[in-house]
Amino acid sequence: MTALADQIGMSRGGLSTAINNKTLTIEALEKIAEVLDVPVTVFFDEQSANWNNKELIAKNVKLDIENQDLEEKINTLKDTIRSKRSFLKLVYNHLKSLQDNRLDETIMAIDEAENFEEMDHILKERQAERNKRELEGKSKYELQKELNERRNKKSETDNPIQKDTNNIE
Image (cartoon, rainbow, N blue to C red; front, side, top):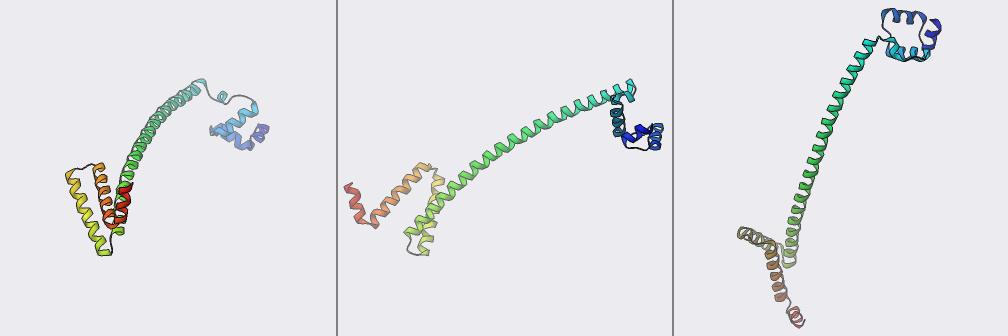
């Protein structure tokens, strides 16, 4: 008993007390089984070992089911995130195009205006026209065509030489 106690790192008295009080730790039992070159299960009666195995199997099955449920929830959440991310990209691109259109209008108004008050007036007119067109339900294509026609008229009236060169082409 002394040699066994030394090999597992316990005193002879400590090992004796633990065995008599049935308070050996799993680690101590594993060390004893290793020293004796036997499986740990030899220290348990067959009914007790089977009961523990059944309990462990049941717990393992329960955990497997919980893991599958969690994996399904994770996949559902990933799908939700993907769809929301796609929706946000669409909204972002739409807002970006609206912003770009308004920025273009502002730049054109600055180019056309001789002073700040005139630019502000032009922007207000364009906003009123945009609101009116939205009410009328014109398509974006029609609005772009109309805007291009106005630009051409504006450039023709501002630059008569350009008008002549346009006719030559």
